[in-house]
Amino acid sequence: MKLNMIDKVIGAVSPKAGAARAAWRSQYEAYRGNYDAGDAGRLQSQWSTQNLSTEMTDRYDRERVRARARDLERNSDVMNAVLRAFRRNVIGSGLQVRVTTGDTEINDILEKTWNRWCKRINCDVTGQQSFIQIVRMCIQRKLTDGGILIVKRYTDQGFLPLQLQILEVDELDTTQLQPKKKGNKVVGGIEYNRWNRPEGYWIRQYSIDGYTQMTPVYVKAQDVIFYYTKKRPSQIREMSDLSQTLVRIKDMNEFMTAVTIKEKIAACLAVFIKRINPGGGTPGKIRSGGPAVNYEGKRIVPGMIMEMNAGDEAQMLNPSSQGTDATAFIKTQQRMISSASGLSYEATSRDMSETNYASARQSMIEDDLTYEEERELLVECLLNEIYESFVISCWLKGLIPAADFWERKEMYFSHEWVVKPKRWIDPSKEANANGVALKTGQKTFQQICAENGRDWKKVVDEMAESQEYAREKGIDLMAMILGTDIQTEKEEKEDGNQKVPDEEKSTGGK
Image (cartoon, rainbow, N blue to C red; front, side, top):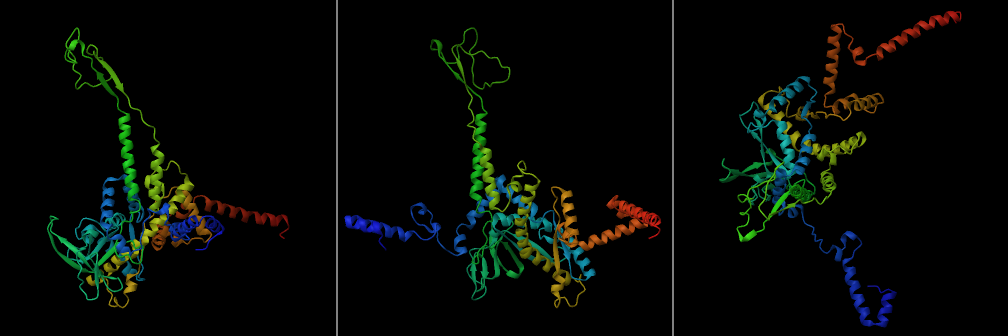
Protein backbone atom coordinates (compact mmCIF):
# COMPACT_ATOMS: atom_id res chain seq x y z
CA MET A 1 0.00 0.00 0.00
CA LYS A 2 1.36 3.42 -0.99
CA LEU A 3 1.56 5.97 1.86
CA ASN A 4 0.43 9.53 1.22
CA MET A 5 1.61 12.69 2.96
CA ILE A 6 -1.02 12.44 5.73
CA ASP A 7 0.01 8.84 6.49
CA LYS A 8 3.64 9.90 6.80
CA VAL A 9 2.83 12.80 9.13
CA ILE A 10 0.61 10.68 11.39
CA GLY A 11 3.22 7.91 11.46
CA ALA A 12 5.95 10.38 12.45
CA VAL A 13 3.88 11.84 15.31
CA SER A 14 2.31 8.55 16.50
CA PRO A 15 3.54 5.29 15.00
CA LYS A 16 0.66 3.39 16.66
CA ALA A 17 -2.00 5.63 15.08
CA GLY A 18 -0.18 5.46 11.74
CA ALA A 19 -0.15 1.66 11.84
CA ALA A 20 -3.86 1.56 12.72
CA ARG A 21 -4.65 3.96 9.90
CA ALA A 22 -2.66 1.85 7.44
CA ALA A 23 -4.48 -1.30 8.58
CA TRP A 24 -7.90 0.27 8.15
CA ARG A 25 -6.96 1.67 4.73
CA SER A 26 -5.76 -1.70 3.48
CA GLN A 27 -8.96 -3.35 4.76
CA TYR A 28 -11.11 -0.74 2.98
CA GLU A 29 -9.21 -0.97 -0.30
CA ALA A 30 -9.59 -4.74 -0.25
CA TYR A 31 -13.39 -4.28 -0.47
CA ARG A 32 -13.55 -1.09 -2.51
CA GLY A 33 -13.17 -1.78 -6.22
CA ASN A 34 -13.52 0.35 -9.30
CA TYR A 35 -17.32 0.00 -9.51
CA ASP A 36 -19.82 1.29 -7.01
CA ALA A 37 -21.97 -1.74 -7.84
CA GLY A 38 -19.08 -3.93 -6.67
CA ASP A 39 -18.60 -2.13 -3.36
CA ALA A 40 -18.66 -4.60 -0.44
CA GLY A 41 -18.52 -1.93 2.26
CA ARG A 42 -21.05 -1.04 4.92
CA LEU A 43 -23.68 0.37 2.57
CA GLN A 44 -23.85 -2.81 0.44
CA SER A 45 -23.04 -5.32 3.18
CA GLN A 46 -26.54 -6.84 3.00
CA TRP A 47 -26.38 -7.31 -0.77
CA SER A 48 -25.24 -10.93 -0.90
CA THR A 49 -24.89 -12.47 -4.37
CA GLN A 50 -23.20 -15.37 -6.12
CA ASN A 51 -22.64 -16.42 -9.72
CA LEU A 52 -24.30 -19.74 -10.55
CA SER A 53 -25.74 -21.38 -13.64
CA THR A 54 -29.35 -20.54 -14.44
CA GLU A 55 -30.59 -23.95 -13.34
CA MET A 56 -28.76 -23.72 -10.01
CA THR A 57 -30.19 -20.22 -9.53
CA ASP A 58 -33.77 -21.14 -10.42
CA ARG A 59 -34.35 -24.70 -9.29
CA TYR A 60 -34.90 -23.97 -5.58
CA ASP A 61 -37.29 -21.06 -6.18
CA ARG A 62 -39.05 -22.20 -9.34
CA GLU A 63 -42.00 -24.00 -7.79
CA ARG A 64 -42.50 -21.43 -5.02
CA VAL A 65 -42.50 -18.55 -7.50
CA ARG A 66 -44.92 -20.44 -9.74
CA ALA A 67 -47.27 -21.12 -6.82
CA ARG A 68 -47.24 -17.46 -5.78
CA ALA A 69 -47.85 -16.32 -9.35
CA ARG A 70 -50.86 -18.64 -9.58
CA ASP A 71 -52.17 -17.34 -6.26
CA LEU A 72 -52.04 -13.76 -7.58
CA GLU A 73 -53.61 -14.94 -10.83
CA ARG A 74 -56.56 -16.24 -8.82
CA ASN A 75 -56.90 -13.32 -6.43
CA SER A 76 -55.26 -10.17 -7.80
CA ASP A 77 -56.99 -7.76 -10.16
CA VAL A 78 -53.66 -6.07 -10.95
CA MET A 79 -52.11 -9.39 -11.96
CA ASN A 80 -55.04 -10.17 -14.22
CA ALA A 81 -54.83 -6.71 -15.78
CA VAL A 82 -51.31 -7.56 -17.03
CA LEU A 83 -52.28 -11.07 -18.15
CA ARG A 84 -55.36 -9.90 -20.03
CA ALA A 85 -53.38 -7.17 -21.77
CA PHE A 86 -51.12 -9.83 -23.30
CA ARG A 87 -54.03 -12.16 -24.08
CA ARG A 88 -55.86 -9.36 -25.89
CA ASN A 89 -52.98 -8.08 -27.96
CA VAL A 90 -50.38 -10.76 -28.74
CA ILE A 91 -52.66 -12.41 -31.30
CA GLY A 92 -55.41 -9.79 -31.24
CA SER A 93 -58.81 -11.10 -32.23
CA GLY A 94 -57.29 -14.16 -33.88
CA LEU A 95 -54.67 -15.60 -36.22
CA GLN A 96 -55.00 -16.53 -39.85
CA VAL A 97 -52.60 -18.58 -41.91
CA ARG A 98 -51.82 -17.55 -45.49
CA VAL A 99 -50.37 -20.46 -47.45
CA THR A 100 -47.71 -19.42 -49.99
CA THR A 101 -46.68 -22.65 -51.73
CA GLY A 102 -47.01 -21.10 -55.17
CA ASP A 103 -49.69 -23.60 -56.16
CA THR A 104 -53.13 -22.00 -55.96
CA GLU A 105 -54.94 -25.33 -55.68
CA ILE A 106 -52.77 -26.56 -52.81
CA ASN A 107 -53.05 -23.16 -51.10
CA ASP A 108 -56.84 -23.39 -51.11
CA ILE A 109 -56.82 -26.99 -49.88
CA LEU A 110 -54.47 -26.25 -46.97
CA GLU A 111 -56.25 -23.06 -45.91
CA LYS A 112 -59.67 -24.69 -45.89
CA THR A 113 -58.33 -27.79 -44.12
CA TRP A 114 -56.56 -25.63 -41.54
CA ASN A 115 -59.75 -23.71 -40.74
CA ARG A 116 -61.55 -27.00 -40.24
CA TRP A 117 -58.77 -28.52 -38.12
CA CYS A 118 -58.71 -25.48 -35.79
CA LYS A 119 -62.14 -26.38 -34.42
CA ARG A 120 -62.09 -27.80 -30.91
CA ILE A 121 -63.29 -31.28 -31.87
CA ASN A 122 -60.37 -31.71 -34.27
CA CYS A 123 -57.30 -30.02 -32.76
CA ASP A 124 -57.74 -30.67 -29.02
CA VAL A 125 -57.46 -34.19 -27.58
CA THR A 126 -60.05 -33.22 -24.97
CA GLY A 127 -62.35 -31.66 -27.58
CA GLN A 128 -62.86 -28.59 -25.36
CA GLN A 129 -60.80 -25.76 -26.89
CA SER A 130 -60.33 -24.40 -30.37
CA PHE A 131 -56.82 -23.69 -31.61
CA ILE A 132 -57.07 -19.95 -30.89
CA GLN A 133 -58.28 -20.66 -27.37
CA ILE A 134 -55.36 -23.05 -26.86
CA VAL A 135 -52.90 -20.39 -28.02
CA ARG A 136 -54.39 -17.78 -25.67
CA MET A 137 -54.15 -20.21 -22.77
CA CYS A 138 -50.52 -20.95 -23.65
CA ILE A 139 -49.72 -17.22 -23.57
CA GLN A 140 -51.23 -16.84 -20.11
CA ARG A 141 -49.58 -19.97 -18.74
CA LYS A 142 -46.19 -18.88 -20.03
CA LEU A 143 -46.53 -15.50 -18.33
CA THR A 144 -47.74 -17.00 -15.06
CA ASP A 145 -45.98 -20.38 -14.81
CA GLY A 146 -43.01 -19.53 -17.01
CA GLY A 147 -43.77 -22.16 -19.64
CA ILE A 148 -46.12 -24.83 -20.93
CA LEU A 149 -45.81 -28.16 -22.76
CA ILE A 150 -47.64 -28.89 -26.01
CA VAL A 151 -47.56 -32.58 -26.94
CA LYS A 152 -48.39 -33.69 -30.47
CA ARG A 153 -50.64 -36.72 -30.26
CA TYR A 154 -51.74 -38.91 -33.16
CA THR A 155 -55.25 -40.22 -32.60
CA ASP A 156 -58.35 -41.25 -34.52
CA GLN A 157 -60.63 -38.71 -32.79
CA GLY A 158 -60.50 -36.05 -35.53
CA PHE A 159 -60.55 -36.00 -39.29
CA LEU A 160 -56.73 -35.64 -39.19
CA PRO A 161 -54.51 -37.87 -37.02
CA LEU A 162 -52.79 -34.82 -35.44
CA GLN A 163 -54.17 -33.46 -32.16
CA LEU A 164 -52.68 -31.38 -29.36
CA GLN A 165 -52.40 -32.21 -25.68
CA ILE A 166 -51.59 -29.31 -23.36
CA LEU A 167 -49.64 -30.10 -20.18
CA GLU A 168 -48.55 -27.86 -17.34
CA VAL A 169 -44.89 -27.78 -16.36
CA ASP A 170 -45.86 -29.40 -13.04
CA GLU A 171 -46.34 -32.65 -14.94
CA LEU A 172 -42.62 -32.98 -15.64
CA ASP A 173 -41.37 -35.79 -13.41
CA THR A 174 -38.40 -34.19 -11.63
CA THR A 175 -37.66 -37.42 -9.72
CA GLN A 176 -36.33 -39.12 -12.86
CA LEU A 177 -32.52 -39.19 -12.93
CA GLN A 178 -31.69 -42.16 -15.19
CA PRO A 179 -31.41 -41.24 -18.90
CA LYS A 180 -32.73 -43.44 -21.68
CA LYS A 181 -29.59 -42.99 -23.76
CA LYS A 182 -26.06 -43.46 -22.50
CA GLY A 183 -24.16 -40.19 -22.23
CA ASN A 184 -27.29 -38.10 -21.72
CA LYS A 185 -28.41 -36.47 -18.49
CA VAL A 186 -31.85 -35.88 -16.97
CA VAL A 187 -32.44 -32.51 -15.29
CA GLY A 188 -35.83 -31.33 -14.10
CA GLY A 189 -37.65 -34.18 -15.84
CA ILE A 190 -36.07 -33.46 -19.26
CA GLU A 191 -33.38 -35.62 -20.88
CA TYR A 192 -30.57 -33.66 -22.58
CA ASN A 193 -27.71 -34.71 -24.80
CA ARG A 194 -24.14 -33.44 -24.48
CA TRP A 195 -25.11 -30.17 -26.19
CA ASN A 196 -27.97 -29.56 -23.75
CA ARG A 197 -30.50 -30.26 -26.47
CA PRO A 198 -33.70 -31.94 -25.24
CA GLU A 199 -34.17 -35.52 -26.42
CA GLY A 200 -37.11 -36.58 -24.28
CA TYR A 201 -39.53 -35.56 -21.56
CA TRP A 202 -40.62 -37.60 -18.55
CA ILE A 203 -44.34 -36.91 -18.01
CA ARG A 204 -46.10 -37.82 -14.79
CA GLN A 205 -49.23 -39.91 -15.09
CA TYR A 206 -52.25 -39.71 -12.81
CA SER A 207 -55.54 -41.52 -12.57
CA ILE A 208 -58.67 -39.59 -13.43
CA ASP A 209 -59.23 -38.68 -9.76
CA GLY A 210 -55.92 -36.82 -9.75
CA TYR A 211 -54.50 -38.57 -6.67
CA THR A 212 -53.24 -41.98 -7.71
CA GLN A 213 -49.84 -41.63 -9.34
CA MET A 214 -48.76 -44.14 -11.95
CA THR A 215 -45.56 -44.87 -13.85
CA PRO A 216 -44.29 -41.81 -15.78
CA VAL A 217 -44.24 -41.85 -19.56
CA TYR A 218 -41.24 -40.93 -21.71
CA VAL A 219 -42.14 -38.75 -24.71
CA LYS A 220 -39.58 -38.02 -27.43
CA ALA A 221 -38.62 -34.38 -27.89
CA GLN A 222 -39.75 -34.38 -31.53
CA ASP A 223 -43.34 -34.70 -30.29
CA VAL A 224 -43.10 -32.03 -27.57
CA ILE A 225 -43.02 -28.24 -27.82
CA PHE A 226 -41.67 -26.54 -24.69
CA TYR A 227 -42.86 -22.94 -24.90
CA TYR A 228 -40.89 -20.67 -22.55
CA THR A 229 -38.56 -17.65 -22.61
CA LYS A 230 -34.84 -18.37 -22.53
CA LYS A 231 -32.92 -15.48 -20.97
CA ARG A 232 -29.48 -17.04 -20.38
CA PRO A 233 -27.44 -19.57 -22.38
CA SER A 234 -27.34 -21.95 -19.40
CA GLN A 235 -31.13 -21.86 -18.90
CA ILE A 236 -32.88 -25.17 -19.54
CA ARG A 237 -36.14 -24.76 -17.62
CA GLU A 238 -38.79 -22.08 -17.25
CA MET A 239 -39.22 -19.25 -14.74
CA SER A 240 -42.32 -17.08 -14.41
CA ASP A 241 -42.13 -14.05 -16.70
CA LEU A 242 -43.67 -11.93 -13.92
CA SER A 243 -41.28 -13.02 -11.18
CA GLN A 244 -39.82 -9.50 -10.95
CA THR A 245 -43.18 -7.92 -10.13
CA LEU A 246 -44.88 -10.51 -7.92
CA VAL A 247 -43.77 -8.92 -4.64
CA ARG A 248 -44.89 -5.47 -5.77
CA ILE A 249 -48.27 -6.81 -6.91
CA LYS A 250 -48.75 -8.54 -3.54
CA ASP A 251 -47.79 -5.38 -1.63
CA MET A 252 -50.16 -3.32 -3.74
CA ASN A 253 -53.04 -5.71 -3.07
CA GLU A 254 -52.37 -5.65 0.67
CA PHE A 255 -52.21 -1.85 0.63
CA MET A 256 -55.55 -1.59 -1.17
CA THR A 257 -57.10 -4.05 1.29
CA ALA A 258 -55.82 -1.99 4.23
CA VAL A 259 -57.15 1.24 2.69
CA THR A 260 -60.53 -0.41 2.08
CA ILE A 261 -60.79 -1.56 5.70
CA LYS A 262 -59.74 1.89 6.94
CA GLU A 263 -62.39 3.60 4.83
CA LYS A 264 -65.02 1.12 6.04
CA ILE A 265 -64.14 1.95 9.63
CA ALA A 266 -64.14 5.66 8.84
CA ALA A 267 -67.64 5.36 7.41
CA CYS A 268 -69.04 3.81 10.57
CA LEU A 269 -71.11 5.72 13.18
CA ALA A 270 -71.18 4.11 16.61
CA VAL A 271 -73.19 5.03 19.72
CA PHE A 272 -72.16 3.97 23.23
CA ILE A 273 -74.59 4.07 26.14
CA LYS A 274 -72.98 5.22 29.38
CA ARG A 275 -75.09 3.65 32.13
CA ILE A 276 -75.47 5.18 35.56
CA ASN A 277 -76.92 3.01 38.34
CA PRO A 278 -79.45 5.14 40.25
CA GLY A 279 -80.51 3.84 43.67
CA GLY A 280 -78.30 0.76 43.52
CA GLY A 281 -80.64 -1.11 41.17
CA THR A 282 -79.76 -3.17 38.15
CA PRO A 283 -78.18 -0.98 35.43
CA GLY A 284 -80.46 -0.31 32.49
CA LYS A 285 -83.51 -1.75 34.23
CA ILE A 286 -84.89 1.20 36.24
CA ARG A 287 -86.65 4.13 34.65
CA SER A 288 -89.16 6.49 36.23
CA GLY A 289 -92.61 6.52 34.75
CA GLY A 290 -92.42 3.23 32.86
CA PRO A 291 -90.63 -0.06 32.29
CA ALA A 292 -86.87 -0.18 31.98
CA VAL A 293 -85.27 0.01 28.53
CA ASN A 294 -82.88 -2.68 27.34
CA TYR A 295 -80.43 -1.37 24.70
CA GLU A 296 -79.32 -4.75 23.43
CA GLY A 297 -79.89 -5.11 19.70
CA LYS A 298 -80.97 -1.50 19.25
CA ARG A 299 -79.91 0.36 16.07
CA ILE A 300 -80.00 3.96 14.97
CA VAL A 301 -82.51 4.47 12.16
CA PRO A 302 -83.63 7.69 10.39
CA GLY A 303 -86.26 9.64 12.35
CA MET A 304 -85.88 7.49 15.46
CA ILE A 305 -87.17 8.86 18.81
CA MET A 306 -86.18 6.88 21.86
CA GLU A 307 -86.35 7.59 25.60
CA MET A 308 -83.42 6.39 27.64
CA ASN A 309 -83.22 5.08 31.18
CA ALA A 310 -82.80 7.58 33.95
CA GLY A 311 -79.23 8.79 34.19
CA ASP A 312 -78.06 7.04 30.98
CA GLU A 313 -75.91 9.08 28.61
CA ALA A 314 -75.36 8.50 24.87
CA GLN A 315 -71.88 9.11 23.50
CA MET A 316 -71.17 9.04 19.72
CA LEU A 317 -68.07 7.69 18.02
CA ASN A 318 -67.46 9.04 14.51
CA PRO A 319 -63.95 8.02 13.34
CA SER A 320 -62.45 10.29 10.74
CA SER A 321 -60.37 9.19 7.75
CA GLN A 322 -56.66 9.98 7.79
CA GLY A 323 -56.93 11.39 4.27
CA THR A 324 -54.02 9.38 2.88
CA ASP A 325 -53.55 9.93 -0.83
CA ALA A 326 -53.89 6.30 -1.87
CA THR A 327 -54.57 7.15 -5.51
CA ALA A 328 -51.08 8.52 -6.20
CA PHE A 329 -49.45 5.53 -4.51
CA ILE A 330 -51.55 3.00 -6.43
CA LYS A 331 -50.85 4.74 -9.74
CA THR A 332 -47.10 4.75 -9.08
CA GLN A 333 -47.12 1.08 -8.15
CA GLN A 334 -49.14 0.08 -11.18
CA ARG A 335 -46.90 2.13 -13.48
CA MET A 336 -43.87 0.25 -12.18
CA ILE A 337 -45.60 -3.12 -12.52
CA SER A 338 -46.67 -2.29 -16.08
CA SER A 339 -43.28 -0.95 -17.15
CA ALA A 340 -41.52 -4.02 -15.76
CA SER A 341 -43.78 -6.09 -18.00
CA GLY A 342 -42.98 -3.87 -21.00
CA LEU A 343 -46.40 -2.23 -21.04
CA SER A 344 -47.75 1.25 -20.47
CA TYR A 345 -49.83 2.24 -17.46
CA GLU A 346 -52.86 2.80 -19.69
CA ALA A 347 -52.66 -0.71 -21.16
CA THR A 348 -53.13 -2.38 -17.77
CA SER A 349 -55.14 0.17 -15.79
CA ARG A 350 -57.47 1.16 -18.67
CA ASP A 351 -57.22 4.68 -17.25
CA MET A 352 -57.16 7.16 -20.14
CA SER A 353 -57.91 10.28 -18.08
CA GLU A 354 -54.39 11.70 -18.49
CA THR A 355 -53.85 10.93 -22.18
CA ASN A 356 -54.49 12.63 -25.48
CA TYR A 357 -54.30 11.25 -29.00
CA ALA A 358 -50.53 11.71 -29.34
CA SER A 359 -49.62 10.18 -25.97
CA ALA A 360 -52.08 7.32 -26.43
CA ARG A 361 -50.66 6.62 -29.90
CA GLN A 362 -47.09 6.63 -28.56
CA SER A 363 -48.03 4.26 -25.73
CA MET A 364 -49.72 1.98 -28.24
CA ILE A 365 -46.58 1.91 -30.40
CA GLU A 366 -44.38 0.99 -27.42
CA ASP A 367 -46.86 -1.65 -26.26
CA ASP A 368 -46.98 -3.12 -29.77
CA LEU A 369 -43.20 -3.63 -29.65
CA THR A 370 -43.64 -5.71 -26.49
CA TYR A 371 -46.47 -7.72 -28.02
CA GLU A 372 -44.45 -8.18 -31.21
CA GLU A 373 -41.55 -9.64 -29.24
CA GLU A 374 -43.91 -12.13 -27.59
CA ARG A 375 -45.59 -12.86 -30.92
CA GLU A 376 -42.21 -13.58 -32.53
CA LEU A 377 -41.42 -16.21 -29.90
CA LEU A 378 -44.92 -17.65 -30.22
CA VAL A 379 -44.60 -18.01 -33.99
CA GLU A 380 -41.07 -19.40 -34.01
CA CYS A 381 -41.40 -21.84 -31.12
CA LEU A 382 -45.02 -22.91 -31.31
CA LEU A 383 -47.12 -21.98 -34.33
CA ASN A 384 -44.66 -22.86 -37.10
CA GLU A 385 -43.93 -26.31 -35.73
CA ILE A 386 -47.62 -27.07 -35.26
CA TYR A 387 -48.40 -25.93 -38.80
CA GLU A 388 -45.63 -28.05 -40.30
CA SER A 389 -46.92 -31.11 -38.43
CA PHE A 390 -50.38 -30.24 -39.73
CA VAL A 391 -49.15 -30.19 -43.35
CA ILE A 392 -47.46 -33.57 -42.88
CA SER A 393 -50.72 -34.97 -41.51
CA CYS A 394 -52.58 -33.60 -44.55
CA TRP A 395 -50.15 -35.36 -46.86
CA LEU A 396 -50.38 -38.63 -44.93
CA LYS A 397 -54.17 -38.35 -45.10
CA GLY A 398 -53.94 -37.95 -48.88
CA LEU A 399 -55.38 -34.43 -48.98
CA ILE A 400 -52.30 -33.10 -50.81
CA PRO A 401 -51.62 -34.86 -54.12
CA ALA A 402 -47.84 -34.44 -53.99
CA ALA A 403 -45.54 -37.29 -54.92
CA ASP A 404 -42.48 -35.08 -54.32
CA PHE A 405 -43.56 -33.98 -50.84
CA TRP A 406 -40.42 -34.96 -48.93
CA GLU A 407 -38.10 -33.70 -51.65
CA ARG A 408 -39.84 -30.28 -51.67
CA LYS A 409 -41.29 -30.15 -48.17
CA GLU A 410 -40.01 -26.61 -47.53
CA MET A 411 -42.12 -25.41 -50.43
CA TYR A 412 -45.20 -27.14 -49.02
CA PHE A 413 -44.44 -25.73 -45.56
CA SER A 414 -44.30 -22.16 -46.90
CA HIS A 415 -46.82 -19.93 -45.12
CA GLU A 416 -47.35 -16.62 -43.32
CA TRP A 417 -49.22 -15.73 -40.16
CA VAL A 418 -51.62 -12.81 -40.41
CA VAL A 419 -52.87 -11.17 -37.23
CA LYS A 420 -56.31 -9.63 -37.44
CA PRO A 421 -56.10 -5.83 -37.22
CA LYS A 422 -56.81 -3.90 -34.06
CA ARG A 423 -59.19 -0.98 -33.89
CA TRP A 424 -57.50 2.41 -34.17
CA ILE A 425 -58.01 5.38 -31.89
CA ASP A 426 -58.81 7.65 -34.83
CA PRO A 427 -59.51 5.58 -37.99
CA SER A 428 -59.65 8.64 -40.29
CA LYS A 429 -56.15 9.77 -39.29
CA GLU A 430 -54.75 6.28 -39.76
CA ALA A 431 -56.46 5.96 -43.17
CA ASN A 432 -55.11 9.34 -44.30
CA ALA A 433 -51.62 8.42 -43.10
CA ASN A 434 -51.76 5.16 -45.06
CA GLY A 435 -52.93 7.06 -48.14
CA VAL A 436 -50.01 9.49 -47.94
CA ALA A 437 -47.53 6.67 -47.29
CA LEU A 438 -48.85 4.77 -50.30
CA LYS A 439 -48.64 7.79 -52.61
CA THR A 440 -45.12 8.73 -51.49
CA GLY A 441 -43.81 5.16 -51.73
CA GLN A 442 -43.13 4.83 -47.99
CA LYS A 443 -45.42 1.79 -47.90
CA THR A 444 -46.61 -0.70 -50.47
CA PHE A 445 -50.14 -1.94 -50.94
CA GLN A 446 -49.02 -5.33 -49.64
CA GLN A 447 -47.69 -3.78 -46.42
CA ILE A 448 -50.89 -1.86 -45.75
CA CYS A 449 -53.00 -4.98 -46.32
CA ALA A 450 -50.76 -7.02 -44.01
CA GLU A 451 -51.03 -4.38 -41.27
CA ASN A 452 -54.80 -4.65 -41.56
CA GLY A 453 -54.74 -8.44 -41.38
CA ARG A 454 -55.67 -8.97 -45.02
CA ASP A 455 -54.14 -10.92 -47.88
CA TRP A 456 -53.42 -8.33 -50.58
CA LYS A 457 -54.16 -10.78 -53.38
CA LYS A 458 -57.57 -11.53 -51.94
CA VAL A 459 -58.19 -7.80 -51.54
CA VAL A 460 -57.40 -7.21 -55.23
CA ASP A 461 -59.59 -10.15 -56.26
CA GLU A 462 -62.48 -8.81 -54.17
CA MET A 463 -62.05 -5.32 -55.64
CA ALA A 464 -62.01 -6.67 -59.19
CA GLU A 465 -65.04 -8.86 -58.49
CA SER A 466 -67.03 -5.98 -57.00
CA GLN A 467 -66.15 -3.65 -59.90
CA GLU A 468 -67.12 -6.23 -62.48
CA TYR A 469 -70.43 -6.90 -60.77
CA ALA A 470 -71.17 -3.17 -60.46
CA ARG A 471 -70.35 -2.64 -64.14
CA GLU A 472 -72.84 -5.36 -65.11
CA LYS A 473 -75.48 -3.52 -63.09
CA GLY A 474 -74.64 -0.18 -64.72
CA ILE A 475 -73.09 1.41 -61.63
CA ASP A 476 -69.83 3.35 -61.63
CA LEU A 477 -68.41 1.99 -58.37
CA MET A 478 -65.20 4.04 -58.47
CA ALA A 479 -67.14 7.29 -58.81
CA MET A 480 -69.21 6.35 -55.78
CA ILE A 481 -66.12 5.49 -53.72
CA LEU A 482 -64.13 8.58 -54.63
CA GLY A 483 -67.12 10.92 -54.43
CA THR A 484 -67.00 14.17 -56.39
CA ASP A 485 -63.26 14.13 -57.04
CA ILE A 486 -63.55 12.32 -60.37
CA GLN A 487 -66.51 14.41 -61.48
CA THR A 488 -64.69 17.64 -60.57
CA GLU A 489 -61.57 16.67 -62.52
CA LYS A 490 -63.72 15.66 -65.49
CA GLU A 491 -65.54 19.01 -65.51
CA GLU A 492 -62.29 20.95 -65.24
CA LYS A 493 -60.86 19.02 -68.18
CA GLU A 494 -63.93 19.69 -70.30
CA ASP A 495 -63.81 23.41 -69.46
CA GLY A 496 -60.15 23.55 -70.49
CA ASN A 497 -60.89 21.91 -73.84
CA GLN A 498 -63.63 24.44 -74.54
CA LYS A 499 -61.42 27.44 -73.77
CA VAL A 500 -58.67 26.51 -76.22
CA PRO A 501 -60.69 27.07 -79.44
CA ASP A 502 -61.96 30.49 -78.20
CA GLU A 503 -58.46 31.67 -77.53
CA GLU A 504 -57.29 30.45 -80.89
CA LYS A 505 -60.10 32.41 -82.57
CA SER A 506 -59.20 35.58 -80.74
CA THR A 507 -55.54 35.30 -81.81
CA GLY A 508 -56.23 34.43 -85.39
CA GLY A 509 -55.57 30.73 -84.90
CA LYS A 510 -51.98 31.20 -83.84
